Amino acid sequence: MSINLLGLDSRALQAFCTGLGERPYRARQLMRWMHHAGMDDFGTMTDVSKPLRERLAREAVVTAPAVLRDTTAPDGTRKWLLDVGTGNAIETVFIPEPSRGTLCISSQAGCALACSFCSTGQQGFNRNLTADEIIGQLWLASRVLRSDAASHVEIATRDTAAACGQALANDRPISNVVMMGMGEPLANFDNVVTALRLMLDDFAYGLSRRRVTVSTAGLVPGIDRLRDACPVALAVSLHASNDALRNELVPINRKYPIRELLAACLRYIEKAPRDFVMFEYAMLAGVNDSPPHARELASLVKEVPCKINLIPFNPFPGTRYQRSSPAGIDRFREELMQAGLIATVRRTRGDEIAAACGQLAGQVQDRTRRKRRRNEDETAG
Ligand code: SAH
Image (cartoon, rainbow, N blue to C red; front, top):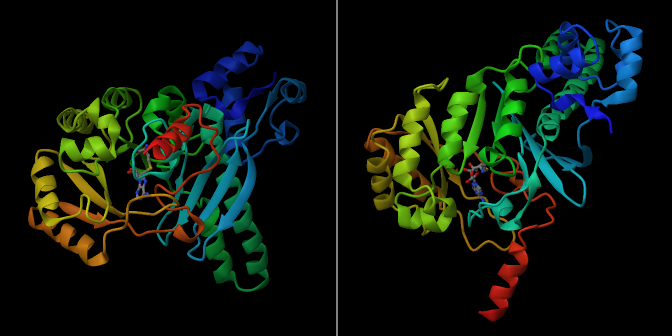
């Protein structure tokens, strides 16, 4: 079987090249062709010797998951549904903003953590994505968005030079990556770290550590390992102000309760590129959104340098939760700010195409059979 070079970080690609009897610098050339130029055809890699190009064409490939669906919402948010084989599909979302372009990447087909308010969590789990499937999402989105920008340049050159300049500024449309798509990134540690290394590598995507965020439901050993292996910005899905509530919403809390989680956050900050952790808090009407919850939350996190990002709950078919009212969210935020915390409300993007936080469903063949169990429970009850 051919090896997919997309999923090899710099060290692995050098080992691959030396294994073919080539000099290690070939790895840098290949990385630039693949990740900077978005090429998948070895024949176009003109500074690579012809015999090597021919050998690579026989023994290797550069390939990302195939696009099953490509949808753009009225607010410009774009979602790709990608085929990862055997009936499974994952989702990748691009969120354009005036000052940045953020790509939201998936790390698993499904998710085993079963957070009660998350659509992916309710699908069950199929498998970890490979490193090439993870970085392939960034490769594919960069390629598509760049070629779209280039076609705008063509039109613009016929119009005005100013418009052309604007389109050229879009040459690197993705400035930020968040591992906030389907799956729990720290439960697929090695493949995620390989992909992160490529995101940061100047010969690949050259993103700054501060602009790459791993979001976790709170796998404490994974947070410590990430600190040592590849510290990037950290977001933690807190969602509750005490253990009893968090046990219900984020069941992994039974294994790693809040106190241990916050201690891991403090250890992480020592080595992190940012001097705070982002706590995510989904606003669920009547569940975790009262002013007393806000005060409890403020006293809970007071020792941890942090910002709180309030996410208005995004509904999905079959959920029992509802989004807190805008006034309720404002009141909650006020309470946090009065306690001296920095709190923001995440603007909901892409909800018309089910691309908002926690709405990513893809297509997952549930290997945990969670769906069937739930249906049986419902029938029994
Ligand atoms: N497994 C990672 C990534 C999950 S998605 C994690 O748990 O952090 C990114 C964020 O969206 C998480 O904070 C997640 O809890 C939140 N989220 C999940 N479902 C949601 C929903 N329906 N509405 C709003 N936010 C949701």
